[in-house]
Amino acid sequence: MNPINLHQIAVEAMRTRGLLPAFAPQALQEAEDARQTIPERSSAIRDLRHLTWFSIDNDDTRDLDQLSVAEPLAASSTRLLVAVADVDTKVAPGGAVDDHAGANTTSVYTAAGVFPMLPEVLSNDLTSLHEGQERLAVVVDMQVEADGTVSASSVYRALVFNRAKLTYDGVSAWLDGTAPPPPQIASVPGLEAQLRLHDALAGALRQWRQTRGALNVNTVSARPVFDESGQLVDLRPDHKNRAKDLIADLMIAANGATARYLADQGFPSLRRFLQAPRRWDRIALLAASHDVQLPATPDPLALDRFLNARRLADPAGFADLSLAVVKLLGSGEYAAAPATADGANGLGHFGLAVNDYAHSTAPNRRFPDLVTQRLLKAAIAGEAPPYSAGQLTEIARHCTLQEDNASKVERQVLKAAGAWLLHGRIGEVFDALVTGAAPKGTFVRITSPMLEGRVVRGFEGLDVGDAAQVRLLAVDAEKSFIDFERA
Image (cartoon, rainbow, N blue to C red):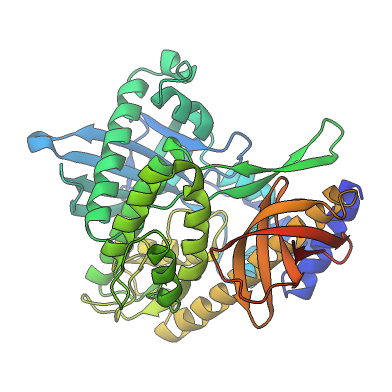
């Protein structure tokens, strides 16, 4: 198989799952026409270009959604500003681009490449917060206390300027003391102080959530590796690191602040929630296998204590335990929250230990974030909500469905890539972790290459989190299947 075949598998998988693999000509033209739109200027848009804004993302990311900057305040508190790209200025509601985004609801990241939610002329250019470019943004302005609580927040529109595009790996290695500083530190005054302040601030935000039961897991995803000719050569682990955690902690804080802002303004909103795990009994059994007894009912604080203890006792095995727990927790969902100041009707997030959470920080690649941005801008302007409660309910249902479909496409293409890599290894035995056990089948993950397959023989008695040895029986890249038997 070559990359062109893999791309075709991805296209067919998207079509089968009800996703659009290509933009309509009208959408591409509409995106190109957005180059001609005149940037909005008004007294309601603050000029914050003078601040030391910066971004941290993957090395090859072009669709930059957010920047941040912070400053110390009195009494050990800190002001944190998160600027989110104002995508709404270039994507008109009801237009061809908006229709495509609303149909797919997310960018789809496959081993064959990215199928972006928005045309690249927008997401990778006009609505991306590129280094050295001034852009319109929606800013979430928060006051964070020394203990990590967000004591005050506001949301407004602003003009911003990215002074440094940094990378996760570069920043993380520097913070850990294993690599020299990113080169931008020498050329951007104040950037080193910003990064160190951000690192401390993220730690405080994380600690506050963990005292409430936020789960500190360490999952690993597979990253396709291509040679110079574009040929797929491996699927390697893509580990979390300190800089990824830093950005995640800031975005969780910003997403919570936007949810509270909309509620305070009497606006309905889209919320991201994760209910208490249905398979708590299995999580309890995993803990019991390490001589830890969890409560009979879901308890995030007790679960996090167990996870932290295992992280210290078995660092090498913690990623596998994390994966098992994440699989048993299940997937998050979207839901519409009513236009009341007190509420989301219990739409909390079990894994993050927050009760008010709205996706808002990635409007270039997630439709719920674009919808939330439109709600925020209407609230800021004192206008009526642009979506009714009924419309938000339907959007939430569709976004949950399409997110699941996108995940299935990503897994299918990853399995096709893995099947191609494994075609010469039939009969080989692998160490594996059980990642799924249901009537539809039992699935395991191996680590070299990192991929999942189905156990078609000897799966009886296996459950999520079990370690097993499996023998490779058969692969079919075109049909995206990898079959094992228990060895």
